[in-house]
Length: 421
Image 1: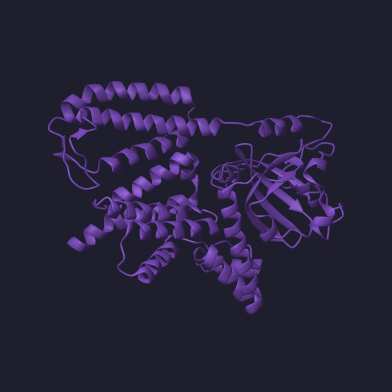
Image 2 (image 1 turned 30 degrees about the horizontal axis):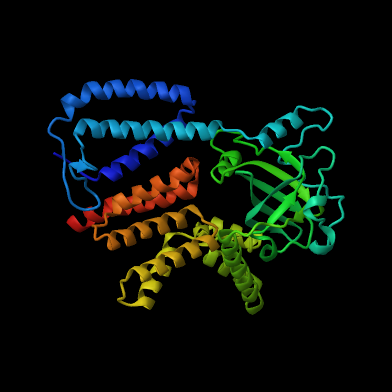
């Protein structure tokens, strides 16, 4: 019996290792010991059970016997799967256990009676602070930002995402010193178009996000960890300042794309009623921040709130339009242009899991065309999951990630059955 789809099996072993490390909440040492026990079992069983298995060649979904001059045997492939399983589990366990300086700082402030305890349910910033009308007049320079009493030292970082919660309340996801920080800002005068992609200096009260309070309820802390966010900073607009940034072509390109998106949405707002604009913005780029609570609750009660999130269907429509626009030209430059356009759309959609999944799978499909290899939907799906979880293993805990991949896996398994029967 031949071993088929080795890349799919390797990706599945990696995903399974991450899932086991999370479900059983094991630390790195325990998971490593369990892996060694499994290795001993595989060594004993593989010689008896896997006899007769042989890799076969052909296509992207199958392996050839010699790989880089090394013959892959069934027993060695079983150990490859075990190694990948352990590596995924250790990676996930390390990410679950990882703490940074801001987390320690927040804990120390909670234990300090001088400041008292501030939870997530408290006001995100002092409502007594005077709201600023103009960012340029009310924000100091980066060198002048100082930490008020009871706040963390001033930090610097790049703004990755902007969420408009209210007319005087926005949330920023800031990449700062190898970590992401959720910065909740109170005050008027901040425009997403003016702040996205820019480097800022900020300071404020630090808190840890609350986890699951009761079994089966929403785990806000885990949700933020899937976005590599572990601490929350609450501040006023006066505690925020634009900082001079180094010339970075990637960041400049990202900021330009996001500014183009927000400029387009501003023009759309002037051309249509506010209610229709909220629906249009959600269907184009995802998110419900542009909709009022009553309209969004109506979508949620009717079970159609998913149309307000960008999914793989949106990416497929863009991909089909680009193919129709470019016609039958199948040169390397055309493929590169299509891939670049899809990455730009993913950036404007803020790299949601379903969009990244779709773009990655289309990228693998394009690579199979360039390399003249057969594309396999099941292998492409698992390879996309493997690539995404290499970047952040906690993405597996994201509901959007799981629903997106489950839907495609159902298609991968269901389509052959439907065509057969």
